[in-house]
Image (cartoon, rainbow, N blue to C red; front, side, top):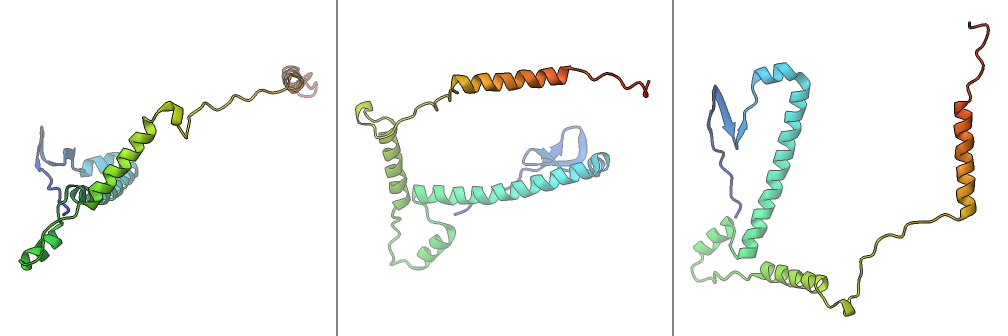
Length: 157
């Protein structure tokens, strides 16, 4: 069952005529005039992201209901219309989630002598001495070339 979130509407403090939806001040024409297309673009992005998040939150709520063994509205209505049918909810989602959680905990906190995985830092590469000398010489030559100024052109003076 997916719950619809109802907005709480109230007058904005010190701003008669403006309302808050979910704690945010509604967009005013003055704001759009002042900041123009940037504000319009940002509000469009915000609305798009909010809608995408609302869809994902609906999926999360549905998953949470499955985890807790709660039927969605349509299934509840179908079960109510069929009184002789079993209303038992098989909590397979919860069983699978707890099994995966237990496996992760077993791996994470297992005996260090029986670990089949490990975490180690990436080795820091070290260059051979002759390569380091060559790179330093190239860098010095580049600095010398950059620091030597050409003589001014007498025609430009």
